[in-house]
Image: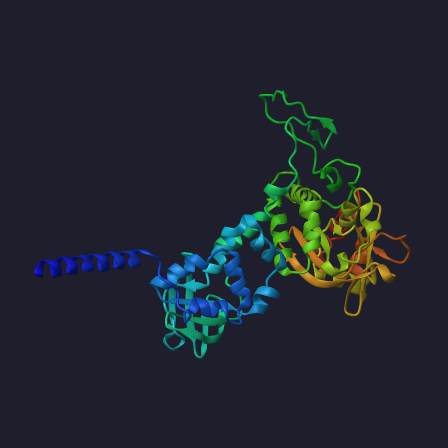
Length: 452
């Protein structure tokens, strides 16, 4: 009888040990009181929806089963309306799932950070393996550059949720989004073996050209801007090349890329950026011009103005290029220099890259107005981008050429006496100030401004 009891106890113990080992090896179940369940049922619906779309529920269940977690939940408006629409489209594309996961995990810390024990200054590692900075100044609690607006909004035994005012974007995701706009990957590529034309002679460059061993002969002077532009029927000439000449002292491609990124981050100019980069090769052409030493001013119509264009205005071949050319001035102008010019001269005519058409500017309502009548546009967002070579000025309309009328002042035809008589010593008519030296110097500057 004792032997039977012994074997019965042995088998019972064996079954218990097997069941306990099997239960320990299986994933832990999430209770209904978990902070993860609270997130899915909370008013942070946009974050919860993105977590499900990013296929992160299983990973987060494993983390919650092993650790307390802290969730920094952006308010719904920050994800739905405040986030750049193009950036949100980038995150939701199937090929960018990893970027979406990284951005969401950047809002989760595998440790409990309670509002009552908020550190004055400390770095924490998030589930995306990036560091965030927690800081408290007086009553204000922040995480990186986002302010905590609802501390301890939801508290559970295995974690806590804090409401924050904005979306936290890790640097790796921001860089991935910027690479999408890299001009090297999206600009037109010259086919291999295609003939190349020398813009100085308009002759085909022979690949088997033998270079002489003697000293190089002095080359011709700097090209005008219209000779420097790529050949083609849609390209119009323009005067006033910038200083420097064709010596490739400038990284024009990087400067153009910077100003396009600035347009995108500034907001409201996505349509123009799309035309420059995706619909045409104008961004590449601008980069080549700036690399050759030329300066340009871009009058950038905002998205609201671009949306008013109809199909007829865009259906003609080369229409987007012609529209943009009329908004590019081959001079370096800032809001201050243009306003000073229209204040002193009333009406000023600027050359554009769409010759023979010129652009008329005048003072109106304390600002600069381009064009006239219903087709006019005001300087709306001044100095969006200025780097000394490229100037971008935001306007609230799309400009089209009209029949020119008399009465305007052509900047390219101002004489030295007119400039001196009107105290234009500080005007930046070509990206530099006209200094009060001698009349011969002023005449030289006036000749420099004329069309070649």
